[in-house]
Image (tube, rainbow, N blue to C red; front, side, top):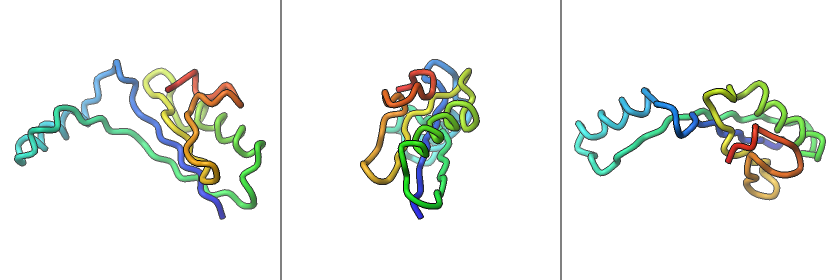
Length: 100
């Protein structure tokens, strides 16, 4: 069964308090060379049957409308597992509000 992976990150212009706290913790633990940490979400969707163009379009729609909050997050990638990683703004569908 194929697994499709969707990665969602907070928009770059927004504060990421969880990432900021992690950056501070790393510095306190002696790993100060890491200046910025951003924490996002990863979704793994297992599909019955082949990953068709219809399935890909549905995943792009889900990523945009269900898996992410377009006000504060960007879908940064969708990996369909067959042909490598596809950018979230792939032209095959108007996915994810033009996220990059």
